[in-house]
Length: 96
Image 1 (cartoon, one colour):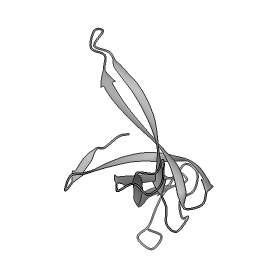
Image 2 (cartoon, helix red, strand yellow):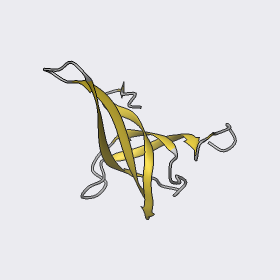
Image 3 (cartoon, one colour):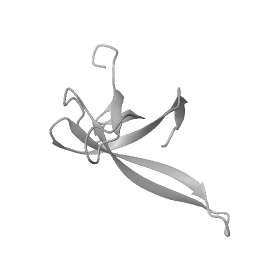
């Protein structure tokens, strides 16, 4: 699920919103697969990031793209760029 894109030195990754209980902050879970160095099997690695959501628009299980940014708080270093999918349904251009 991790589509890592570099945009002028800033990484962008795609992940799923796992928590939106904080004000203007969402927790995004990013999943990626890596090859084990010895056994050569692919392993799923999951990492969580806190991202800034200015409009509190993201809901649980939304698919979002987040981008690295300057430190916004003690733990927030990412910013929500766009919502790709909303609660299992694809967004139309009017909603996004």
